[in-house]
Image (cartoon, rainbow over all chains, first blue to last red; front, side, top):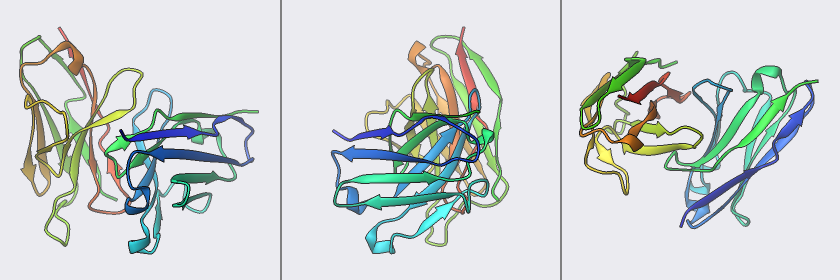
Length: 115
Length: 112
């Protein structure tokens, strides 16, 4: 059974940093591209970042609103994908989902940006 | 960036009825490899999105044949026949052909 579990969310002050993690199991993690998607309260889905697999040189891509502030990374030995969020803003508030190639999704972790 | 325009914004459908959702793209979603990376998702209240249809018309594992996808190029449709109570939620289309990846703004399905 494929499982993805996000963690690391919580209340964060504007301008600070937070690192989200997504632990996975049930599939060969190293073979797959991994994504982060977020959803602001009451809003739609927004793609945030992608990291490809070793065969694709671990290439990374970002949405325009987060480029330069967010960093996606992965640890294939632990089957975990990360999202480092720097210089966080109020508009970054929302649920952050990790997904394996957009097929399987975690339950999300809530990040609230507030002073 | 590719803009996906979903219509209608909301749908009110009777149990057993049929729903149709349109997703129109601002540019062709045919990838250079010949594939079209247009997918459909349902987000039920309080849940994560779930994949229904991938690459225009392929049902994901466990998805009933009441759900069907069609279209090509810039114009795509999701049809739900024999609507059931568990079909309520927000439907999204997603394109993975072009970076940045983009979602449609969603269509809320309510049951009469």
